[in-house]
Each structure stands twice: as structure tokens, then as C-alpha cells.
Image: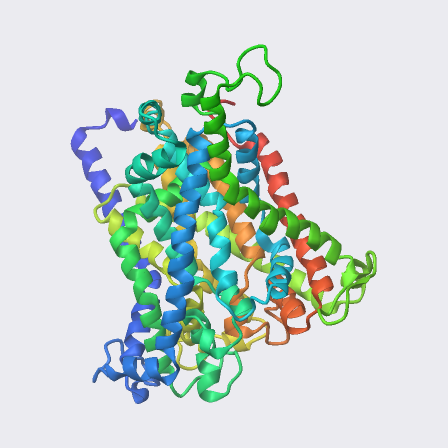
Amino acid sequence: MVATQPRTTRKARETAAKAAILLLLLIVCVPFFAPLFWLASTALKTPDQIYLFPPRWIPNPMRWQNFVEGWTAAPFTLFLRNTMITTFIPMIGEVFVSAMVAYSFSRVRWPGRDKVFFLCLATMLMPSVATFIPIFLLFRTLGWINTFLPLTVPAFFGVPFYIFMLRQFMLTMPRELDEAARVDGANTFQIFGRIILPLIRPALATVGIFSFMAHWNDFFGPVIYLQKKELKTLTLGLSTFESMMSGVGGSFGLLSSRLHLLMAVSLLICLPCILVFLLFQRYFVRDVLMSGLKG
Amino acid sequence: MAIESKADARRGPIRRPGTSRLWGGISKLQRREALEGIVMALPWMIGFVIFTAGPMLAAIYLGLTKWDIITPPRFVGLGNYVELFTEDRLFLQSVRVTTLYTIMSVPIHVIFGFLLASLLNARVPGTNLFRSIFYLPSVLPLVASAVLWSWLLNPEFGLVNYALSRIGIKGPGWLTSETWALPAIVFMNVQFIGITMVIMLAGLQRVPQELYEAAELDGAGRWSRLRYITLPMMSSVIFFTIVININNSFQTFTQAYVMTNGGPSNATLFYMLYLYNNAFRFYKMGYASAMALLLFIVMVVITLVQFRLSRRWVYTEEG
């Protein structure tokens, strides 16, 4: 039995086990890290280094102008502007409207409230696949195709998942906060704006980061709604980059002669996500946990 | 999860005892609070009607019509559904591709996600760093990942086949091969295992340590600790990851759209890609709505069935 063994052998065995696990982790993390490294490596190569065999990991010489050339090979500055519009406007809308609805669902009393909240929860579990065609047709009727409106306006109606997360957070705050303000004559909107919002800043940050990632990375929305070249977002621009340059439609199975530029632009588009992730990772992890275990 | 919050319970019921009408018997102040509350929840309620309930009903109706957007919709009853299952070879292919993909991909994510989480849970130095590395690919734009992996999977100069050649295997043509294109996308998707892993890790960290200590005192080995403590305590988390992984697999779109466009020879014609083609390339809105509705029903049924089954094998603290 383990417990009756002498302390030293047991400790030695544990250390050995930990060393083995560490080694295993080191090996397993290579395929997770290598692609990103390869992306950066290709992005810095001169064209002739791309097809070297065996491949060269560290480019020599490094070609930094790939970033400039790639970025200007298509109107990526314009695409960046478009992406900022379709990222930050919905982000602001989703964060504030979701917080307001969550506040109403958690701390304001009105008849039927919990039934409505239950409905909201139920829609969270509902796949959106059944609704996107009618929604597209609705926006088409409104003449919103080839505008940013289909990608920004819906955000101002709140997102069930964010509402749920923020509600959970608000339920942990003492009720007396609202009561005291109400006694002082504040109305519900004032309590929300002046007392609750400042207190839930960490939760708002979490939702904001989630929302940022979702919109920055969004592809399906832009594909459906933005057909004009000058309206493209970064992800959409990247997906058509190849065909814009070489006339090869859609498939990346074929090698482009400007692969280094393609990779340089890909890396630039990934960069904000990597930065946001590295800066705010505690939020990510905590929230995948929250959504995973409480949902 | 309790819908009614504890804070509410303390404040007592919204209606005074003895009044039955919704708005009867509450004070002016409470009425004002209620009105303001409804106004604040109104955005979501309006959004629910415009973006969920309305479109759901519209999709049901559209699924029963043929509609090319230009001429008015023509009612065809269940015609679309009959056509899907009896005449449309591509539809059946898309179902086959998506099912195969799900069967290959979901077990990999759940099993390896669990194993990775177990490794991270062993409290070795650098755990946080490893966790970040495993999670990092999941935060990148899917389009960028797809572009990158098209390059990695290049038959001649790609890194994947180079790595394989180092261990003496001649790699296939991956995305250009009818046999290997779908496995290639499964393979690429393994890098997104971080999401499953993080959920599993959270579950593992919630398993009470005392259980393991007690079992160890009783002489339980590694295997029986896994079998009788970890797996039962983790069952609800494992179940949850299965549900989200299946739902993600069913809705795979971007990889196919960017990397293969469904080819070669429709070997990667995912359901969502074919649905997209019908709606936005061929403008068969009624037909596409029928497809969307079918997928919706299948996903809801699978989720409900899993919830049902989970009652039998999922351990909950109440049960």
C-alpha cells in the first residue's frame, strides 16, 4: 500500500511522475505552437526560402517588407477600418444592452420576469441555423445588404449568453445597494447607471473581450452581407486575398507565388487576437469555466 | 440553477397576499419599478420577436415553398423535403460528410481534451504557460487558421508532410485528395482542442481532493481512482463537452469554404456549406430553409436525447 511506504521512495516516485508529465506536456505542445511559429516564419521569408527542403525555421535574410507589401497588395487599411466598425459598434451595443437586460432580470422586480428570463435561457441553447435565412431576407427587404447595419444593429438587442453571464454576476452583489439608492429617490435607470455599472466593470470587461473576439473573427456574417469590395472586413479580405492576386478561385490547395505576403497579412490579422488573449487570459479561462459549468 | 434569486426571496412576493390580479395591490412605487424593469428588458424581448421567434416561424413557412427571391414564393407543401431525401444526391453527400466528420472529430476532442486536462491538472511547473499554448490557436480568426493550414497541408512543401517524411511516411495530398481532405480538416481542428480542455480542467479542479486521498488510503490504484472517482465526478462536464462539440461539428463552415470549397469531388461538402450554396449562390431560399430547419431539428433532438441519456449516466450532487 502506498500510504505505508517509506516517505522517501514515495516522494521520489512522485517527482519522477511529475517529470514524465512535464516531458509529455513539452512534446504535446509542439504541434500546438509550431503552426503559429511557421506562420511567422513564412511571413518573414523571401520567396525563394519558402520552397527550401528541408524547410528553414528561422528565415535568413528576414524580409520585413512582406508586411507592408502584403498589406498594400489589397486595400487592407480599408478592410481594417470596416472591421473596426463591425467590431466596436456591436461590442459596445452588446455589452451595455446585455448589462441593462441582465440588471432587469436579476435585480428589478416585475410580473412575469422569471418566465421571460427562462425564455431567454432557452434561446441560448437554440442553434441559430434555423433563423439566418429569414433574418437575411428581412435585412434585404430593408435594403440593408451591402451596409454594415446587419452586423451592427442586432447587437443592440442584447445577447442571451452575455445576459446570462452578467446576471449571474449581478446576483452576487448585495441587494442593499439598490434599496439604499431607491430610498434616496433614485429610479431604476439611475441605480443601474450610477451604482451597478461601475461595480460590474470586471464582468463587463469579460463580456467585452468575448464580444470583441467574436466580431473580429466573424466570417459568416460578412460573407452573407458584404459583397462589395470596399465593404469587406479583414477576415473576408483575407479569404479572397488569393483570388484577388492570382485569379485562383477560393482554393488554397494550390500554391500561390505570393505565399509570404499571404502569411504576413494572416499574421497581422491574428495579432490583435493574440495580444488580447495574452493580456486578458484570466478572463478567457474564467469565462469558459463559467459558461461551461454553470450553463 | 435557481431562476428566483435568493435576494428576491428575502424581499417577499411581488403581489400582496390575497390579490390575484397581476397589477392589483402593489404600491405605486413597486409599479414604477416594475414598469422601469420591463422597459429595461424590452430590447431583448423585441429582439426575441424580430430575430428569433419571427424568423423561426418564417423559416417553417419558407421551408414549404420554392422561392428564388425574384418571383413570389410558391407553396409546394413538403416538396422540398421529399426532393432533399429522394432526388438530391449532393444533400445526401453533405449529410454523409458532416456525419463522418462528427464521428471522427468529437471523440478526439473529448478524449484528448480530457487527457490534456489531466496532464495540466497534475500540478507540474509551468501549467499556466502550457494551458495558454494549448488555448492560443482557439482564439485566432478561423479564416487565418484555414489559410495557414492550407499551407501547412501542402503536399510538397507543407510542414505536415515534412514532419511525416522525417519518420519515414510519405504524406498524402491532403486537401487535394478525395480520401484525405476530410481527415485533413479533422486533423486541423484538433488544434482547437483548447476549448474542450479548459472546460475539462475546470471540472477536474472541482473534484474534491479528499475523495482521492480516501481512495488512496483504501488502496485504490490509478485506474480505479479514474474509474470510480474522476469519471463519475466529471460525467456532467464530459457530457457538456460532447454536446458543444457535436453542435460545433454540425455547423462547420469556414474551413470548408476557405480551404476546399467543398471539393475535391464534394469530399468536404459540409452541410452548412451546401446550405450556404443553396441560399446564397443558387438563391433557392425555400429549399435552403428546409435544410436549415432539418439541421435545427436534428440538433435540438440530439441535445434533448443527450440530456435524457445523461440522467442515466451523469452523476449530479443531488442525485
